[in-house]
Figure 1 (cartoon, rainbow, N blue to C red):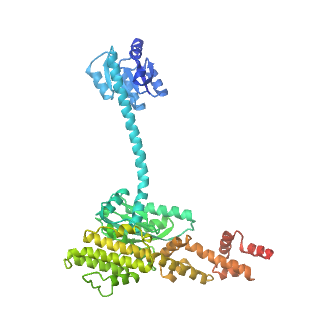
Figure 2 (figure 1 turned 180 degrees about the horizontal axis):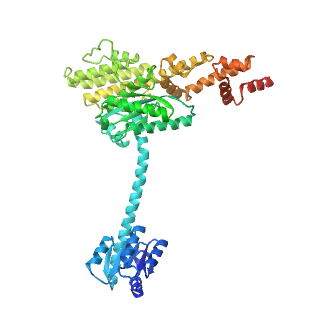
Figure 3 (figure 1 turned 135 degrees about the vertical axis):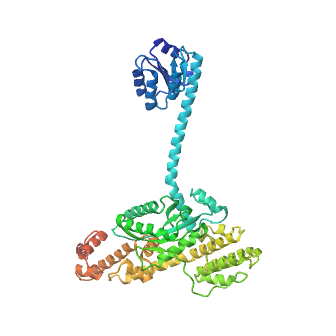
Length: 534
């Protein structure tokens, strides 16, 4: 329901307007009146007024001045002027003030009703517009908050090969994730490896600091360009720079990476290393990211560095490409974990087809032979299709071009090999790490020592250890040492300081602090309690 205010210094004019129509039939619940501008302002401060009918000529203050005030303090109000003069000057001022209309006095009742009806319609439309914009702003804000999550999920699926990267699957995936990138666009990944925190952080604080690093990476690497900073399913951080940054060479990203390393050291209490990729098609991103992760995995020398990705060249003799797929040979490479050799054969086979050395109609044969290799491998490894992400979709894909075959074959081979070997390799590394820590519990060993023992980058090992055990490697090492110290307190007469030295703590007070944090009492109190119990 709307409210109307009638302002005129002539009482009979006000009464005439109030009584010329049953205003409730138009949806007006109340009609207020005022004989001068100050009274009108007071009413508008106390009530929401939708329709203002105002005389232009009033002795104390004219209606034009009042409407100027209304426009500032009640912009939703529609104004209608009344005047005894038809001079153009008044009309011009009325229009300039944005009034709905102006009518000559004495006012014709039907003309006034028609004008007010139109004004009410304008009020409703304005209100709907305001609501629409409010809803738009609300959903725009929700989109702004949700989009990074959608983008991260897309890249997680893409890098783990759950997102199919051919046909309209890719276009739909990009659209659903609201990523401003075409299916034929190019992307450059930068792997951001958090190697070490310079301050002790609990799990919650570390999560907050990782988020801060992630936001800072977005501001530095993506400023003025398109892209997203994401964490893949294994917890690795990537800055994904989209096509817009392709005008810059990969080498030109070294300086921003060096700056980011310094920012992280100064403000986020951590040391990082950046591994810079190159601009590749979307179908090649997962393979490139695996290459960057492999680079990090085996980097045991360079810390707080910028490392450019250079594909490792093979020193072995070039692989011969027969006219047809050698199913036995391909299966052997896969079973021996020689993924690079299989992918090399795929690329060489496609290159040969593209060069016209093999007839085009053999594409279907290559497709079926590749499936035979994959199914044979899965049979030998005792795998079911459910163990490979989106395997039914990969296996039933319709391959219509050499480019599709290349990316399809690389992805399906990589997906089944990942499913077969990654978990086993991870478990093996973690088991070796645990065994080494237990066997050397009385040595002054560090995270770096454990990583060196298994031949991996310390940051990579820490991430892998937490993924497999749910516990930080450092925390596990401390718990192992303290458990050994407790055993020595229970079974020997060694002094507490000697036990601290025995388990690799040169700082006695630090040992005491860590022991109390773990068991609730200091070492001597623990020994006294256990003796009384005995």
